[in-house]
Image (cartoon, rainbow, N blue to C red; front, side, top):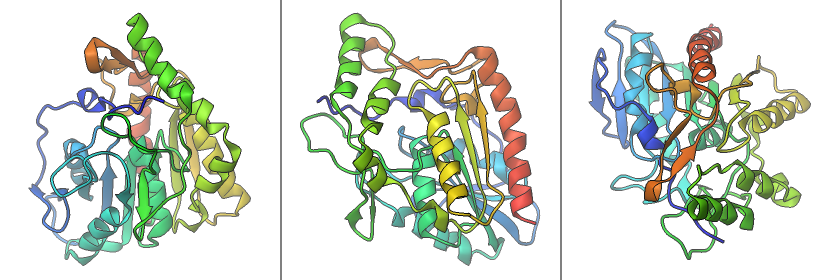
Length: 316
């Protein structure tokens, strides 16, 4: 089976500079911390990007700081001192950043949230299941269970995306369907949609059951955001599975889920100028994200106020 390189989602994130109250490179972990202009203690939020790697969420941290949050963008692979690829990433990467926030004089440690998108949404759910000091989760187009990691190059044995206490987390491995999706795209020069590969792998019930996170341990509410036309993976179904599990386990918090039926994988960053229906990929191919320009922009316009409202309620 073809083991594919890291998804080129970095090209989908707006790289234009964004004014921030105050942003500095973190010292206790790899990432960026942005702080509000006002004095005193503030709620805080950890930000995890997706399979683009690096410190990609540093572009979005200023927006949270403007809304009164100490925002920490946490890089977890693809930079010096971190795993080179999205494989065997320690959950303690988030734990270290969390501990750094808890020690800050300008942070109210009772109100620390986490946001993650795509693979970062998967990681956020694992991290919040591990660390009770995280009191709210925004899981954007996430997975509530672990998938196989994304290797750089080919020829390697499948590995988990994550580790806890040095041990790999059980994961759902890819099947030949993932390699076939790549083969069709490269062979026909048509857009690459990964959803079929993920969906085929998810039929492995034993692996799925073993890989499902203990999200009932999350010490606060969870907001699932998903896209009905997600062409990376079925984020709507994965979010439904997550919320259903929490309900079954009688999770004692005000969990929410919002699916945007006609939106695609990166709707949350969509603008009129960059609707993010697709992005350039390797070898001249296009990576299909899904949605329509109008649906993606409308979903983004609804999602950001919804996130702030959810965080405000969690902080009460």
